[in-house]
Length: 251
Ligand code: NAD
Image (cartoon, rainbow, N blue to C red; front, side):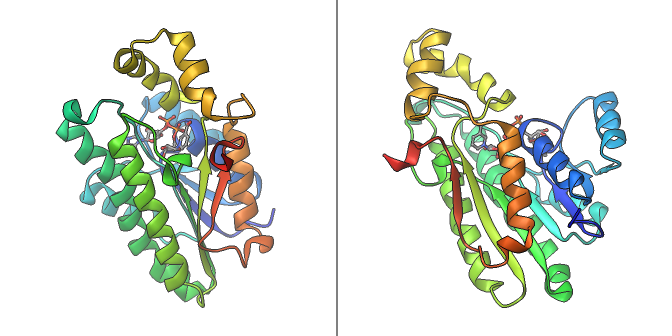
C-alpha cells in the first residue's frame, strides 16, 4: 500500500484503461479521483467501489480541465488517459473531430499538467503518467488526428521529464497496442467502412495484424505498469515511453 496518503487523479477513468488504472492505484492505497462521462448510477457505483470522488468536466475544453483540477485539489499522481478516436481518410476527416481529438488527447494533458505541477514540486514528489499509444511512435492510415495527438503527447511527456528532473517528479508515457475496450470496439464499424472489410477482417487483418503476439493487451496490464511507475523503482524512470504493444513497434 505504498500510495497511502497520495491522491491520484485519473482522467477518463469511468471506462476501459482509465478505470483499470484507477483500480490498480486504489489497490495500492491511493485516494482516487475519477473523471469521465457515464451514467450517474454507474459513476456512483464506481465511487463506492473505489471510495473515490468523481469530478465532472469536459476535458476537450480548457474550462473543463480547469474545473477538474480545481475540484480534484492537489494531486500527487496525475494520469492523463482520457482520449477518443476517429477513423477516416484525410480528405473526409471531419474538421470538428480533428479539433476535438487534439483538444482531448493532447491539449488536456497540457492543462492538467500545468495545474498539477506546482503542488508536486512543492511536495518534492510526483508522478505524471500519460497513456499514449503505439501510435505515439508509429502511424496507421486514416487516423491522422489520433496519431498526431499521440506523437504530441509523447513530446510533451519528454519535455515535462526534463523540466521536472530535479524536482522528484517523473513524467512517462505508457503506450499500449490494441487493448480491448469500448474505444477499440467503437472504431470497428468506421474501419469496416473506410477499408471495405467485415468485422472479423478488421479484428484479424487490421487490429491484431500489427501485434505479433496476436492478443489484445488487457486494461489491467496498463494499471500494473502505472503502479510500477509510481513505485520507488520508478524514481529514475522519466521521459520514457513504455510500450505494451505485444511487439508491434519492434518491427
Ligand atoms: P474508453 O473509450 O473506454 O474510455 C475513454 C474515457 O475517456 C472514458 O472514461 C470517457 O468518459 C472519457 N472521455 C471521453 N471524452 C471525454 C471528454 N471530452 N472529457 C472527459 N472525459 C472524456 O477508451 P480506452 O480504450 O480505455 O482509452 C483510454 C486511453 O487509452 C485513450 O487515451 C486511448 O487513446 C488510449 N489507448 C487505447 C488503446 C486501446 O486499444 N483501447 C490503445 C492505445 C491507447
